[in-house]
Length: 277
Image (cartoon, rainbow, N blue to C red; front, side):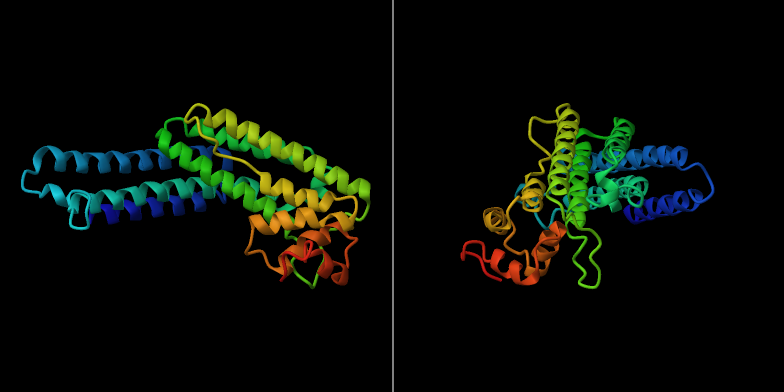
């Protein structure tokens, strides 16, 4: 019952701050909200550790073979608290998205993005501000936030690559070779900036690489390719990495070029006759 009430309080806290943000200073409220979510996440893990500690130190009746198993009631309670902790992390990520979604993420890889160098700097600065607020979050939870944030950013770039997915509307095309070259140059620069930022932040927490964006670079090379006839190599590499990609998705990507018709696409999509849709 306590865990359910704890979880319900976290939902009410999120609803309260969401309502207050309509009338109050968003930055100040967001900072207070983040700090409270950090506290709740840490407390949930502390309770989890305490429950398991009680089992290990004081419960002499538990069968050693059942520890960690489906009949271990301590373990079941601990897992529920881990879920509560991760819920707090998800709400922090949700709050991060509010700052960046409409004005920044939604124009990635568009013409507005192509001529605006402030978009990526704002994304990185905002990410950095949040990570500074998360300094008291457990290191393992900080890594989880960073891992999920990396995936979120990657998804937003993928949305940009798929912006022409609707057959009803072509939102953006880069018809000139100079535009496509600039497109890839800017994309590659920004991905390097993101990898450098993630590298600096995660270096304090782990030796492992948390963030890489090679898939996005590969997609960028398809847009940049100087000659459609030689684009099959990149297309084949993309299909190997993403075997679930369908023909509509692939055409949405290639249509960013503005120089490939549906009939031309059917030839390119075969990728040297090795991959068919």
